Length: 505
Ligand code: FAD
Ligand code: SF4
Image 1 (cartoon, rainbow, N blue to C red):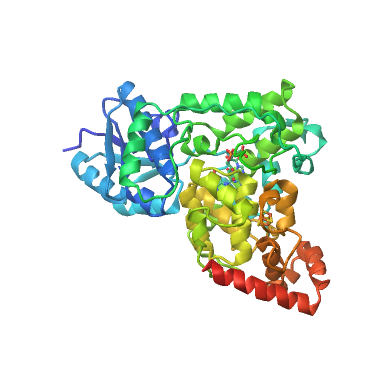
Image 2 (cartoon, rainbow, N blue to C red; image 1 turned 30 degrees about the vertical axis):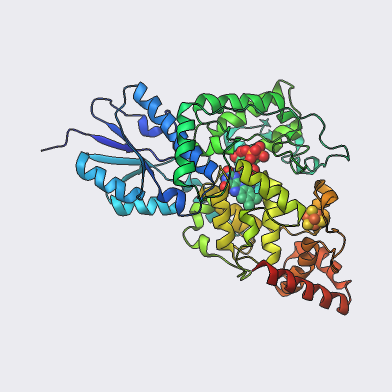
């Protein structure tokens, strides 16, 4: 006899959208939704408490929205299990005619669900502006993948900042205008981002997480992330009205005690699908046409979402599962323990990690040119640093985290993502922040007791990987500078770098 339940719709923790295509043919009388909170999703990497609260609370809010609309939701609150096990059990009990899910964001989850229910129907995810299929076609047509060409294609396809088939302002990219630092007085008065005080659901989840995941890192006192569609829209409006104007100019700048600066704080809401990327892009484009924000800021913001965000997703699905194993530079050190505590004398790392533990947030340059750069220069195993990034940020979902970490930050994919390793001495951090002012090290020194570890390790990195880097045209200037160091200086640098590596273990 055919089951009374026609379709069982699996909604994963990062698929919280009522407008999702999975609901298009939904019939309240015959269909139901399935959602589950399983502890394995918080422990397979040692998740920051704020990341766990964000997912669980947003899921519970979404469950209640569905229930208010009269939709049957089979919902399991936090249990010690895995998604696959829970789903298999539910399917045996509910016996649906068809089980559907939108493409999961993580290769591991897709594999687990398919193992649990081989007849699972997987629908394309319409929360991206480039499908997995389209990216495959784009990649197959090219010898080398680069963001710039991909981004231009998407600008044209979606007609974003395009007039007469040409980029508005006569150029595709205003990157050169988007690298300013603050002067010695710092950013001055900053507009505080809209904050969402935890409601009853979130407070309950916070208590649960404090109890059940007490040993996990991270703090929850300042938890205020958007968790519902309404809050996500409010956060977008707030960014467009108050911070977009200066976003472009200062997107690479860093300043002590200022985690947000002019950043949008929208990544978690976008990744949970509380916001569609096109909504954020159109809101920014509109601000330009309404003369509320300059073109360089608007284009810079759009490039992050329409360009980088779509590009890294494409890379992820095109190259997984092998991508996760890449280790081109054969880096093999364990992650220094201070990444979990912030207890280090290096002020930049202390500031960025402490802020990360407090909020589950650091902006792009803090991730790339402070925590990521140090791990790269030191020679940390890419899997170890990947697991840290996946655990520690509220917006961390593997499809976006892995290519950013392995590809962009650690050069572990040998140049698939980035045309060269992003490496610099401590002088880059000195230029883009005020961190070095309160540090016991000196960014211009590479040897001696006050030498900046970034600077020592930078020269050491160039020496260790010189052969490989010589083949890269974009590394020639950095390698020419290396030639200027005499033999005894190089030896001193090598010894000091060995000591840094020894203490890191
Ligand atoms: P803004 O600076 O305001 O940027 C606007 C939006 O652009 C972001 O919300 C995000 O959706 C998108 N964006 C910006 N840069 C990138 C990028 N490189 N890749 C993809 N999207 C981008 N982003 C995540 O969402 N999850 C991650 O787990 C993650 N891990 C990262 C790890 C490393 C090593 C690096 C270098 C970057 C990582 N990023 C990740 C990208 C970026 O750092 C964050 O998206 C951004 O800092 C989030 O803050 P925001 O919303 O204030 O972003
Ligand atoms: Fe970081 Fe070096 Fe500057 Fe200290 S001197 S804050 S370690 S870059």
